[in-house]
Amino acid sequence: DTASPQKMASSAMKSVLLLAMLLCTLAVAAASTAEASHILVKDEAKITELKEKITTAADTLATFKELAAEHSTCPSGKNGGSLGEFSPGQMVKEFNEVVFTTGKVGQVEGPVKTQFGYHLILITRRGDEKM
Image: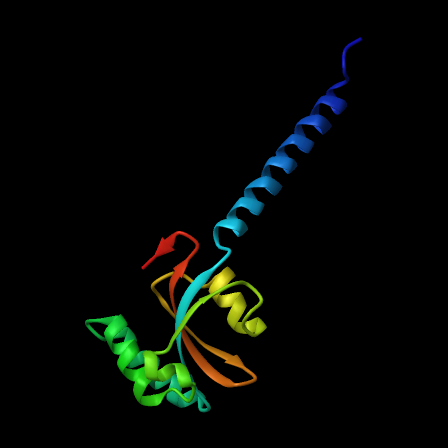
């Protein structure tokens, strides 16, 4: 009794889907924590100006830390904007999405608007990937 081509194709498709789900699960598990710094201000024009200064600087990280200390309204500004290590869901939705989904490690992301104002985000580590 041989299986029909449709049954064989269906079985192969199920295997591919299971493998894809496993790979997605592993990718999320690898990025179970991240480290990031941010600059928070109330004004969109100001955050855009700060991003321009950072992205044109010779040393992105040093400039980010310096401008965070000088301009951020978040207490983390005193530490160069560092938020330390955190897990998915610990930050507000818009921030969380950039850090764990759309943002790139080592690249200044934003402006990102949240209920607190406008953020520039620098992801310094996500899972095993570091800048």
